[in-house]
Amino acid sequence: MLVDVTAPLRLGPHTITTPVVLAPMAGITNLAYRQLCREQGAGVYVCEMITTRALVEKNPKTLRLIAFAPEEFPRSVQLYGVDPEITARAVRIVVEKNLADHIDLNFGCPVPKVTRRGGGAALPWKRRLFGSIVQAAVTAADGLPVTVKMRKGIDDDHLTYIEAGLIAQEAGVEWVALHARTAAQRYSGEADWESIARLKEALDVPVLGNGDIWEADDAVRMVAETGCDGVVVGRGCLGRPWLFADLEAAFAGRPERVLPSLGEVAHMIHRHAVLLAEWWGAEREALTDLRKFIAWYLKGFPVGSELRRSLSMMSSLAELEDLLGKLEPETPFPVSELGLPRGRTNQPAKVTLPHGWLDGRDDLAVPEGAETEDSGG
Figure 1 (cartoon, rainbow, N blue to C red):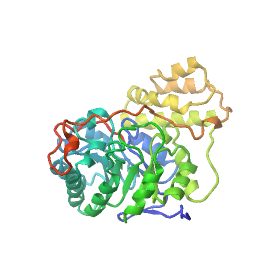
Figure 2 (figure 1 turned 135 degrees about the vertical axis):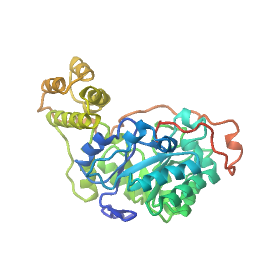
Figure 3 (figure 1 turned 180 degrees about the horizontal axis):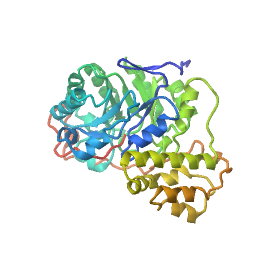
Figure 4 (figure 1 turned 120 degrees about the horizontal axis):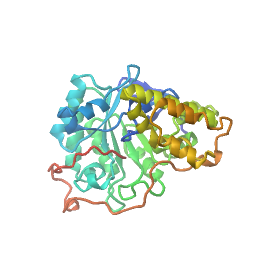
């Protein structure tokens, strides 16, 4: 299959030259990390998932998460909702207050406390409710581009992705992104890229692929093998914001790839810390936020356990600078880590669903208590 991997992606009036989307990840894709990634390469950088009810109720934490830097464009927000009316109200707030330029809808979260109430990856099984939510968002958006992110289905016996993609297309979404795993797979095993190809064949709107993009060459290979119009990158960029430089080069047909030395990684860690301090407005909170990234940044590098432990407990920029100065800056990038999974991995598990959830597909009952601040995809 011949695929033009340099073709830009359209998002309403916006042209996305590098067809790459940073997936929203709770506690990860805040303003600081988005800025760090955006400094490396082009694409769409989505903020942490926003719960529609929390936005409607003006939750302070939610309002903080939906903030964007002045230079961010297009400003992209992912909304999670289970009620068409609440979703419409939340979208109208985004439009009326000019909070974003793009709205993505999350139907991919596989965590049990979401699916047990019928939310996330469980919701497309109720096709009429799913369609009502998507249609409500598109109508309320009043021309603002709306997209959908979803999984293949609940499990291999309850696949929904092609039907849901067609419903979303009919509702007027700009594109459909597919994480090529079921909710039952969670983050285990290999993503089923063939399902991305099948969805691409079924839809007229662009299809984006997600799952097992650990390197830029994986993204190009996904496009070549599936025909998808772009990619969504999540765990592959954890502790590796320079992956977006590789992705920009790969989609432009250039061979160069970034293999930073330990000294260059240390500089990136410090830059991340500074951006977090600016966003939080306090060093202690910023460094606490940074701690979870340390193991990802240093993955594969020969750094002693004591220094790693100290870096995971630092609480000031001065302390961080001192500790980073103890790293061997000339240490080369551990190429043995290339292509390996990053972030959370787990085992497949039966999806917890509301009683009787699988008995029918066409009721419009809104799942009770399904809204949560967890995200996934």
